[in-house]
Length: 387
Ligand SMILES: Nc1nc2c(ncn2[C@@H]2O[C@H](COP(=O)(O)OP(=O)(O)OP(=O)(O)O)[C@@H](O)[C@H]2O)c(=O)[nH]1
Ligand SMILES: [Mg+2]
Image (cartoon, rainbow, N blue to C red; front, top):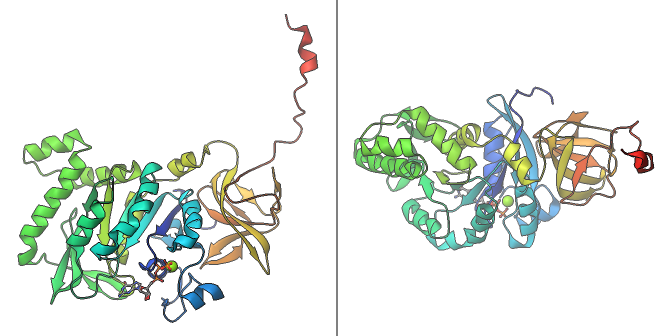
């Protein structure tokens, strides 16, 4: 738990249909957080994700890849999941341990239907998720149409959080609908704050109203304010957004471009402010964070130099290298720094770790600490003289 803040480490998975840009977005997020020194490209075979020869050859993800990042002092693990249906189960296993999912899609209405099974999976389990419409840097990105097509396959309302600023039919920035601030993208850096373009004022007002009406469906106080034409305080809006995401009542929608490095800071800020703490994910995994040490395994690999590795999210207590567990002794404890397993002494709540050589443990298992020593089994024969 080096350099951790009091807030427990959070985890988010990048999921979505094949080739939507998850591995590219993973790279952009890690780079923006300073977790990697340069931003690689899938086409060049230089990304943190897809590092295996099979993934590089096929130019697609073939397994979930984990990496840690510190964003503004908070500790995160991001999990880049494969989009191909061949590896669907691996992605579902990862979704079973994260605090939220970022569903990465393309601005192509025809592809929206491919997201339907994933959205159903997330809604059935009430896993908080937001949408990131990627690849908007090209001319003529059809955001509104894509959104309509996506809404048709989502049980939950999709809530657009920003409107695009376009120049020559290209998205060059956005207006944030809560803060009502406009930003122009600057590749590789945080966006420039600009004045809301006059031509966009009406669209912004309308889109903001639409967003507030969605939130008011779950907040009577906000509904009253809207009916009385009172501007709700921003804190109230931010509070509703975080609560409604945590309860999977709404699906916030952001957009940008992983390759052109647009909308990345906005996405990080949404993760930082709106993704819930790990208690809910622990509960979904059947673990009480206040209870004895427990970690849920979501991926198992056999690597040449480390042997068997069981990737797990720790939800309660701490695990240390060489520690005994109910299912054997941990022989090597690793955290996925920059995507590679890096030796660590211990790991605490919220962290994603790889346990070495837990032979009897399979994906899906919950690993617990052994029963405390010095507690003999209860002897019923002594109870025969009950009054
Ligand atoms: N134009 C454009 N292309 C992108 C963007 N992000 C990714 N791509 C391209 O889209 C293709 C797929 O990108 P990946 O990042 O591998 O997509 P993925 O979702 O991880 O793919 P799978 O893991 O195989 O499902 C690659 O050719 C990328 O170069 C983007 O923002 N804009
Ligand atoms: Mg990928």
